[in-house]
Image (cartoon, rainbow, N blue to C red; front, side, top):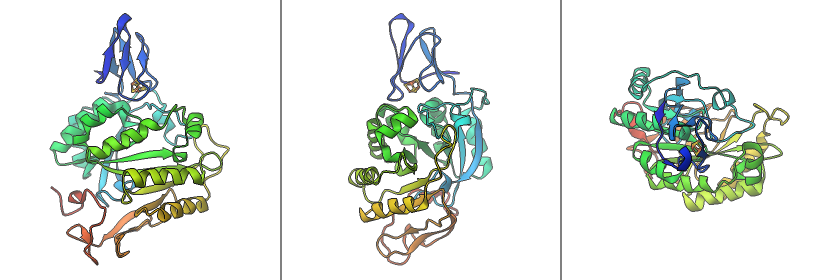
Length: 340
Ligand code: SF4
């Protein structure tokens, strides 16, 4: 347990948490919506700080991050808790699970990451905002040790916490569901408004963090082509056509068992919408696709993948080896043979 950051003390031993857009007002011995920040005698504490639930290495492509440090492995950590309550959550045993993780210090996490051969650390599986204090201290230390840091997030976090962790973050995957359709998110995730997510994405971008966007296409309830087009246009107009977009296939999970997996033709249609709008890096996730990265200028496969995993890079000094144009790849300094 650690005293939380980003809160105000109020009268009557109440506190107001300012970490995420819920801005919960919490009474003595109560917790916020995330279930892991508790008021004790008028002070707010993070209960997730010493509750690590996972520490394993994954390919960076699994986050998914396809235009960042391709082919590297990343040490992936999380704690229980989440500020969204997605009925279809694939990781619900973690995100809605009890606080029975291990107490592991930031120093031990960084040491374990280095010993695992990973090039960086990903704060993932559950929402990293709700274990901010642990993520912040670990990310700061990891950066000093030459590792990268990436968040896999729903984007539901206030701007000030992003400003403070931004200098230690290298990449972020922001996960949309149902293309950010508010009706869908209200019903299936209990989220009142998606506006703070757009604000957060722009803040990450302003902090110089590499941003990739995913969109979980949920059949029947979250697969509107009009909403996909709306999201694509927002990304293109606000972040640029070079922002990687991933359309993800839904599989039944948690409380949503009655819907089928997304038809792959729906994902192909989403890709068509994005490419027609000029998006340069569009990938399909949770399906068997190679998902190569092509040079937007000449079409050369600059990152050749098989089943989503890196096989070969065709780059010269970080540019397309064929036409010498810049390609939108970040984090190449962590790719094999180029360790900082
Ligand atoms: S982090 Fe948790 S306690 Fe704080 S505002 Fe968000 S949901 Fe509420």
